[in-house]
Image (cartoon, rainbow, N blue to C red; front, side, top):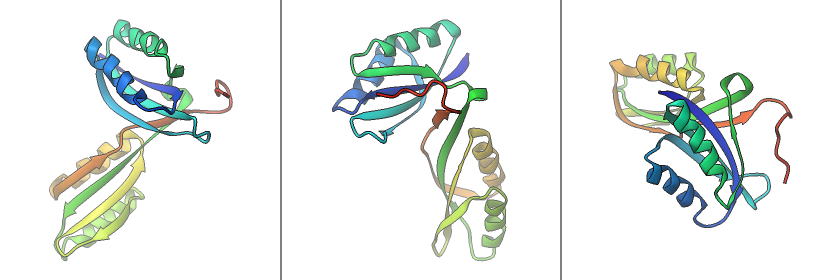
Length: 165
């Protein structure tokens, strides 16, 4: 099993995301993460999908998604040719005497404290998946009350393979 990141450019119309995810579920493919948002041109959406499977399944995913009517372009974002980022929000239980330690760990990872409550902190961090995993593992000594991750958003490096519509 391997992981691939696909970037789709699709028409920004009602039901596009549903049709894409429906294709995955009908074929029994797993989506590890999915992010979607409007591009600089509001007629189009950029969708980043992380999928896992064997080589054959991942190749089929790319071909079948590319056949969908509203999908204008599909490409694999290879790690060495792309930039990936993910956002995570983490609510950590931290009494007054623990806060400075949690804040120090957050500072090392260039994370931001975005909310302070009487018994908790909310931390915001962006980075690649390995950085986020490392940060979360350092917080294991504290009680993580809630955690929300966006999934990967990515772009290819440079101007090669930019799709202009």
